[in-house]
Image (cartoon, rainbow, N blue to C red; front, side):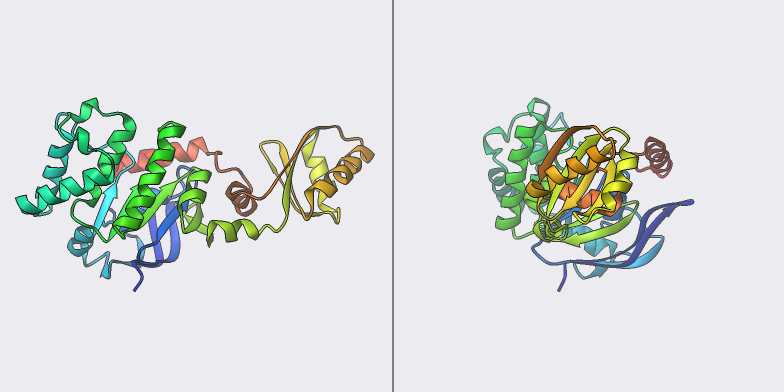
Length: 329
């Protein structure tokens, strides 16, 4: 039985459609990624699955229970690591975990056994009795993951788990996430806007943009869809040369992102000299050119027409205002 099934799941805030008719199945034990820019609808989507927000339309089952009717069963079956910090810095790591266990009705014996286990899993056993205010950002994130596992959930939601962490700490967190998925045999749904995070961690990735899933598959399969190499060309008047390159038999696809031309070709090394010659024939001056195998960012560009790092400030501000009005921030 799938861990999560959604059918037409939709959330609207006034005339803003934050999540737009998502159909999705996530298998038990999967490490599943939702990849998209800030404001794409990732957090709203998992807030509906975790019964924090009611859907506007559609249905979903989480751990076998309907999100509209089985909130208590779902909340007992899931753990959540929120995007914003939610630990009590005035308590020790052990006390934070003990409080969480009490909230879920664990006996003292169960709490003691589980605290010891999850602290060992996330490498914090030697800091169990230190105040959380003395923890580094990475240690706090690991403690939050430990807390989410205290009651042995079937499903763990990680909302941007490495946001704001440095590259070295992020890598460390990735290893802990993989280990938790393996050792605890817990289904993990991870939201992220980091391309490399989704690529490194996830069994499958759903690319989400403007509330819609635009592509879904294993990371390798998503990249294979582009079939070939990606040539990036920085050239004067890219709009003019977009039209020229699109007419070339060498080019399977072409887009402009941040003023740079991205060309999908069969054999990049052989194509680059011919592409430069083509530009020169039309009076173009190529400033830089680079060649790469397709990445998940190339996949994102292919399906959305822009890089994942791009954001629409006005839309982001609007989403923030709506979220605040609904008590979500």
